[in-house]
Image (cartoon, rainbow, N blue to C red):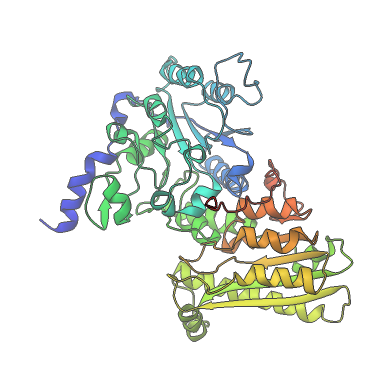
Amino acid sequence: MPATRRRFLTLAALGTTAWTAGRAQETAPARLGILLDTSAEMGFLVPQARKELRVLNEQMAAAGRPPVLLREMTGSDLDREASTSVGARRNALYGLKALFEEVDTVIWITSLIGEHSPQGIFAVEQLLRESVPDRPGRQLILRNLWQDQLIAGNDWVRWPPQPENDPLDPRNRPEEWFRIVEEGHGTIQRSWQVPPASFRAQFGFPARVVESFYLKKLGYEGREAFFDQAWAQGLHERHQLHFVREKEEWPHRITGRQWVTENTLLPFPDEERRIARSEEVMGEMTGRESIPEDLDRIEAAKLGVLFAFGYLSPDWKRHLSVRDQKPRSWRDRYLADLARLGGECAKAAADGAGRTDRLYASERIELASRSIKSEGVDPISRRVAHLAREEQCDAIYLFTNGYLGGGDYGTWAIDWNLLALAIRESGTRLYVRVPFEFGPTPLALSRLAMASGGGVFRGRADDPDWEMELPVPSWPEPPTTPDAP
């Protein structure tokens, strides 16, 4: 028997769910709804979900099918009805109850960060077990993800954060969440989560995982493994929609284009329409004002403008050799975006060179390997410090991909404490624009920029899809040092 087949059989049971226990024999597809968490922690996932849903419902209408319903709530607090500690506007139980009145399956896209009382969890469990005549049994797809967790990628399992930053951390109480979706009442989707061994039947594993450290934590020795997709097939039969791509994998890192085109946030009717939706959504997510338009929105007596890009030397050389050809991989597309945006920056600097109220600077971080970090002091923070202290700029506009090595593209290694030190004492305001092609702006950078009195440019100012709760402004906490003897 081939080795690949043996691996599949070894791990098949880990991804098999009990969909048959609650699957109705209806002829029409079950109705689908989405409860979207719009808290600041969700970041770019909020506008992406809104845009994807709009396209999905256009495709559903063209097929003569009812729309997928959407309900939004800020946060994911959960308590019993008429709770005195969690108000009705914040209690996700009301959002779930309202959706289940009209649909059969709810995808709850949420960070799960908030207050979750045992009474609230029990109420959801009871809600799923209620039956409605002439309708299939209720199911909940708990899509536990948020921006920082996606940015961390497989580092989440290698270097996990403190338990309070992960609601499904084994040191908290994740088993209550898995019990909610037992007996065919749903599944939990979460990249790089190690589910409790007794509840792996309720977990939505991807088709393939390539990460030996993660597999070892599951109790499997090897570099890759293939998982049974019964849970995804059950959802497809129930809704006549695909909830994952055929060969989907969890992202180790994310860039904007790679995430939208190679991963699944909302279900899709078929591959052809998924591709069409991805192209449309990517075009809208990358929409933004031009650099001069951004700069005109910043009030400053002297504005420092810093264009900072990191890249791998081998990738850049390959791009130069094949730049007249169509990109063949996400890495090729990343370099093509880098070259195009770099050209936009060069033009903006040339056009504004004669202005006395602006100072333009650029920082190119060329690295030989993705496994090493930029040597010495963080070059982006160092250049920001120079503009703030030596050039006495009262505001700085940072246009960057944030890449300093230490991992693949999408890795952020900026020293937040050093960056804060560079601007805090001088009172310099920091404004940040990270083009979506390069990925999302980390929340730590957003909080820092807002604490300085500046801010973050996201999407277009006139795009309502980006309207959501903003991060709380805060400076990064200084690193702790051992007590002196």
